Image (cartoon, rainbow, N blue to C red; front, side, top):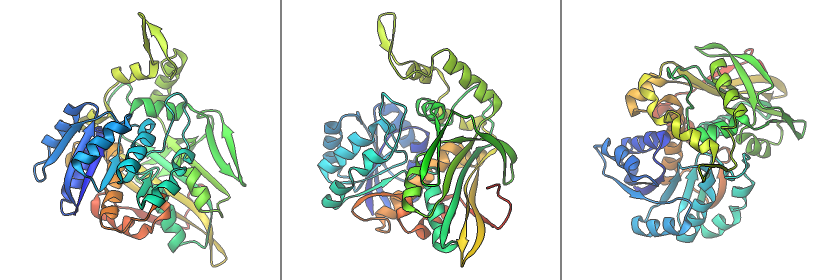
Length: 397
């Protein structure tokens, strides 16, 4: 049905491309492009039912990307590279004339700060070009936006309180490792927390607000308030929201290692000189930490991610908890990747599939909650991320 070009060759790309190959009637031609071609080659070699091409490209260079686009002629570019590269890839998509999808919003390389304003600024250009840009189509952001839209469509007249909860109760049996790109992960966690309440944003010290939350089939886990990008779009697109927060679980051993990394300066994103060479400490740290794409083989346990929502229906207050639990072992058995990569890669493929089928396709720049949630929710069940709903129970809001 269509030609897709995937940029990036990490754990998320591994899942997304393998799931695309499982939907070969939609994704008829696949190209993986990345800075280190051997990583793309490894993914392609593991896929037997579809021919997957590979290419080397510097995603920071829009000109290189445009040249590649002219060669392959994609119908959609799926950006699974670093969030620093979102704008250069969007520029290349506009220059060539192809639609775009990513899983994480833009973040400047020299500042640990991410917000949608940089990408939302492209809305008019994509609209005038007749191209679609789908932002943040992973799990959180991505599925969490779809869950919220689904609840708003089917269960609430007005959503007033939203808590997004993300629990990884798995064990990768490493002293310290991150479940996705270490550089992005550590930058995200160490920045100040932020949540929305009564029409304004409120900040907290990093990981200073926490409480135990009970997760389905897992039990209580200490959960930490953080800022996460989907809060920015959700409070904009659901203006009845009075409070929106994001919570994520961390084990004490992880937090201890993180504190040491910060204390010794290894989380710094500014350059330092070592033996006459300028290096970025957090990028050096990334080079010596375990590759998130290699964690799956020994990973046990599961993730649980969902939206806990309180609002009004027919003038009465009610609550709804929509969530997915994903087994690390099952994800690895199917795709060779752990559940954190799986829960991001499957939604990326799902959004791309709906675009290819013309279901999620309209000119402009959009977040996932701005599309009809029903087709996406059906696909999640079909593609390996079944979801569940609980109503009017104590969900600790």
